[in-house]
Length: 192
Image 1 (spheres, rainbow, N blue to C red):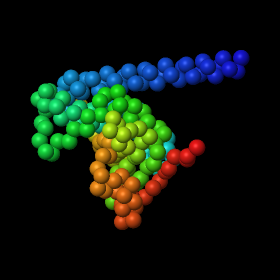
Image 2 (image 1 turned 90 degrees about the vertical axis):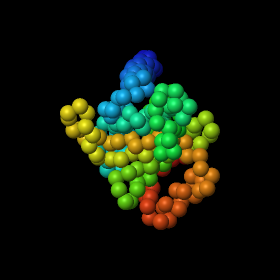
Image 3 (image 1 turned 45 degrees about the vertical axis):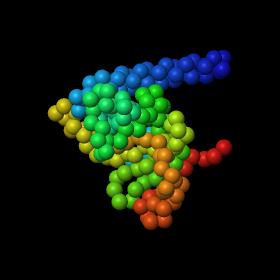
Image 4 (image 1 turned 60 degrees about the vertical axis):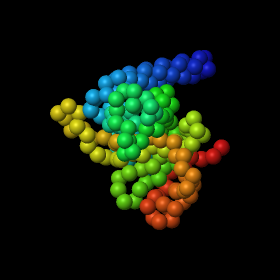
């Protein structure tokens, strides 16, 4: 009896997760198909609990359409769509499915660092890209965005990418920023 209830709860939870992912997938498809879309896109209805427990307001999370395209598309895919591909435009080529997996993984990050100089957070996820690089998500907390004519309070996802630099490598980069007082570690996933 208890096992059946637990199983029904898991099924309901999975259906809810699948519906959430389907809606997110549709919003992302709209951004990829409509290169003129300029309204920020809601990626999550809530802020991950681990951030809320560390003093961040529980707000919806949005990202600008141009950044979503830059996170998902390769430079070649962007060129085919007629998007700017100058040296200032960095395309990360994560692909839509991996991008959605990363957004969902924010509920269980590996490590979170707060940037002491502003309202930015660096989240090291448990996800790796096709090059086996650790995925990083940069967010700006408690900011405002405009949707049509309305201003709304949000936590903004600024960018998502695989950290693939060799000099400095990711560990050196993080340790250096902690040493310089730029980053403070606010959370680290317990190892099992």
